[in-house]
Amino acid sequence: MYIEIVSMKETHLDDVLRIEEDSFPDPWSLRSFCREIKENPYAHYFVALNSSKVIGYIGGWVIIDELHITNLAVDPLYRRKGIARKLLNRLVVRAKQEGSLRVTLEVRVSNSSAIALYKKYGFIPVGCRPKYYTNDHEDALIMWKEIIDEGE
Image 1: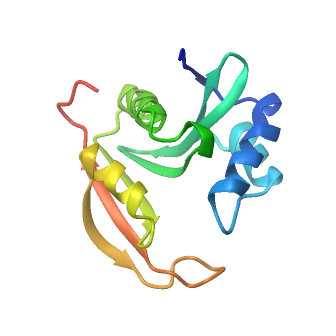
Image 2 (image 1 turned 60 degrees about the vertical axis):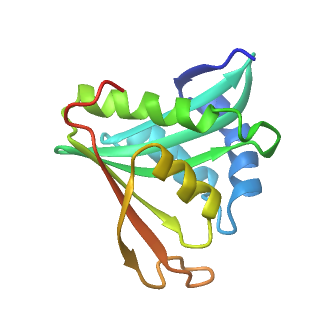
């Protein structure tokens, strides 16, 4: 399967929203994604394409020397095929180009598959944000990864 990683555009948003709604109990809105890709100067968003079909996406903010990953999801039909890792790689490369030295994210403590992916990618758990998620008050695990001398 050939996967292409490209910058997210408005034309991708219908598919992005479908994946977002399939992946999260409290999905982001169309307005939120539009603001990120059109108005946020710190934001970088990418999609994974199989032919012209969006099968995954990632986004984050580069602020000073840190990348904060805001979103990562893959279409349920395409999970466990290395797509999330390709998306992570692309975003980290962009962040490094802009001077980032480390990456952080929050993930639901119940999302064991995402936590396993992040650990495999080199993230380490460093703390917890109690009742972080507004819809169900689930805790978030805070994870960090240094990218200073890495050849991602």
